[in-house]
Length: 92
Image (tube, rainbow, N blue to C red; front, side, top):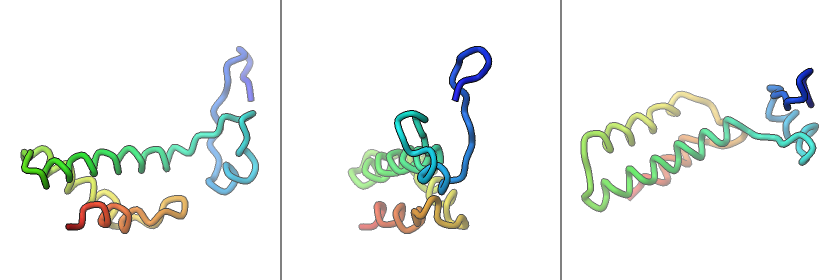
């Protein structure tokens, strides 16, 4: 979809609509919520791995803990149980 100046416009749609109606290269779909979860997951893995290998600081510990807390009271996101996923990564 293009705006008056020819630039591509962004349209916010539900996850269902994104996958059912806009899931083609023509629309260049991006699922921002899933991208954010992936970003948080990679940061969590990096912090948790560093802590487990003895490379630690209060910043790493606080970052790991605050990332885990961020999703504790939230429902699944786009069908992803984020709490279960994040805690499975930090086990052991």
